[in-house]
Image (cartoon, rainbow, N blue to C red; front, side):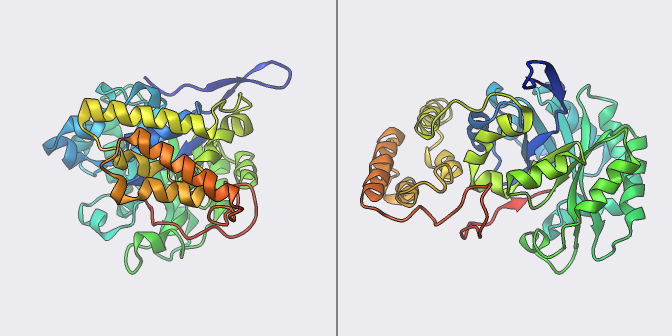
Length: 370
């Protein structure tokens, strides 16, 4: 099924539609797996979610079910593919559509050297006709949207014509949705982490693309951490994709339906979300033998900013407790948080909410793939 516009009511009770790409969580390798997406869907009903990048080779030669399995609750959900050969992309896209994904997205934004060795990711921006051929091959075999995620340029060049012509060529092949990371991708000399930090953000380029291609859906990605920064861009482009902040501070997502769609916010409390996650851990253990720790790692930021959240996170991360059932660990974590809070401990990581000013705490690295 293809993503459909989110239907909400304005303050006067009049139905209004929003682009399916209005808000989305970026594909992030090793992070946005189906367990992470289950958590995110508890917090927001309208936001578009993306898989980790799945290579065409993995679907041609690997365990398709392991790569494509997801729960129905995750919709709307897009599959991001990594690849360059049109025939392989068509095969992978067909599989994605058969498994029920709402969108097929092609990664033309990841700058890592490992990905480049596979001849896909950001290096494909240097071959727009090859990308166009791949897009056409996918469009010809699926009924869901085929989209492209890419950068605004390669290496240190700031030639606007480069990204403009890339979009023009790929759009002619049948792609009408582009998610644009508002940084260049440096193909040599920078790690993926450095590629998210050193090349400067140039939001104006993405706005210029929307003006030049008003008939296309243009969403922007890169550096969004606050409500105001998102709202500012929603006045200029069709959508905003958020990466690391959504992962590290997932409770921000609980406000998105109300803030960005005019829909009712999530009615779940922190404790209720944690309870749903524990039940999910138990179901996954019974169905697939999944250990709860591989799921719990995605919710360590759930209580970000709450008093006592450091102790709560430490309990869930304690390797000595891995032999205990998830429900017992959850009880210990809540008890530890309450004790720290009642003893007047300082707030969690000394962190601020997503809409507040100030520096963020140190966090583990996340690899965004587009």
